[in-house]
Length: 483
Image 1 (tube, rainbow, N blue to C red):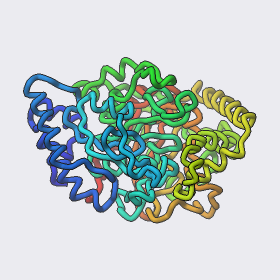
Image 2: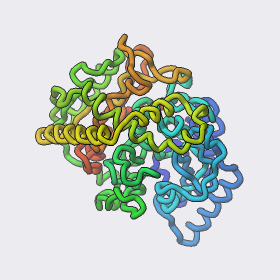
Image 3: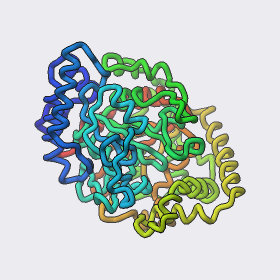
Image 4: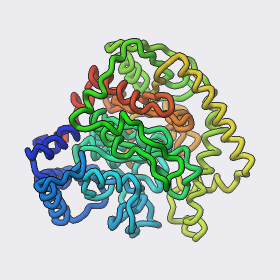
C-alpha cells in the first residue's frame, strides 16, 4: 500500500503523532482517504461519521498537543467501534433491523476508555445480529468480505473489526468474544487478538452478574499493538461487578516500552498441542497441517512442544455444557422476542432464544456444575504445561454469501455454530487466549490462526509468549493483503 501513515503500526503511529512528525489532521485525512478507497470492496466499516466533522475533531487534537495537553497514547487515532458497543450520538444497530435507527445517548465502557486515551470515534465495524454467529453478515448492512479474498467471509462476530485492521483502515480495533468472536476473525485475517479472562475488561450489558462467557478485547497487526489497547481497556469498573483491577505490568505499558516489556526468554516453556481434540472435531484439509507446522516454529525460540490427548469428552461438553449455557445467555433477547418482532430476527438469534424457553433452572444449574467439572480438568493440564494450543477454526474462510458451512470434510454440522466448536473450551475455561497467525493453507491458500490458551488471568504472559512467536514467524508483516 502507498499510504505511509496507515502502514504504521499503532506503536509507531502514536510515537509519530506525539513527536509531531505527523499531525492528527493528517492522520485523519490519510485514514479517511484509505477507507474511501478500500472499504467499498469489503464492507468492514458500516457507519461513518461525516468527514468534515472528523477533520475538525482531529484539528482540536492538534491544538491540544500544541498547548501541552496529551490525552494518551491514542491521541488522534481514528477509531471505528464494533457495532455491538454503544457509541454516543453514533448509530449502533447491533446488526439488527430491530435497532437499525438506534442512536445511543451514552458510550459503552471500552469506548469511554479509548476516548480517554485520545481516540476519535469515526464509525462502526460490521457484526452479525446481536453477535450470534462467526460470519459477519446481517440484514442491515450485508456481509463483510475477507482482506485476502473479498468474496469470502472475515468470520465473526468481530469480522468487520478484523478486516479493517488487516486492510489498514484502523491501527487497532475493539472486538468481543463469546464463541471465538475475537479469535476466528483474527485467524482468518492474519492478525493478532486477545480474548482476556473474564473480568479483565469491563464487559456485559444486561447480563451484569451472569455474563461469565462474553468479554471485550483488542485486535491489531502486532502483539505490541494489541497489548497497548488491552492496557487501555483493562481495569475495574464498579458498574461491572465481575471486573477486576488490571495487572500493573499491563497498565505500565507505553509505546516507548511495550516492545521491550514483552520480550522474555521462552526457553523451556511447555506447549501442549491439542489440535482437533484427538480427531473428535472434523477439520477442512490443510487446517491441521498448517497449524501444526506453525506450532513447530515455537521450538525455534526454545519452547518444548508435545501432543496431548483430550482431557475432556467434546461430545459431552457440547451437549451438557455449551448448548445449555449458550441458550441460557440468549434469554437476553426476550425484550425483542416478546414484542412480536421475532420475524425480523435472523434464524441464529431465534434458534438460540427458542432453546432458552425449553430449559429449567435445574438444567441450567447442572450445566454450570458440568462447566466447573471441565474447568478443574483443564487446570490439571496447566500443572504440566504453560499453554494449550489449537486452531482458531475448523475450516478456512468460506463464501461470504453462505451463512455457515453445513459440512466440514464430509461431516454434517448439527447447528449453525457447530463448526466453531474448537473455540468453546477456552470460553468455558475462562482462559486468557492470544490468537496469532499460523500462515496460509488449504486448496485456496487462505489464512488460519492459532489459539494460545493460557491459564485464567495470565494475559501478560500470553502476550509475552505471542511476542516470541511473532518474532520468529512474522506472518502479518510477511503477508499483507494485496489490496
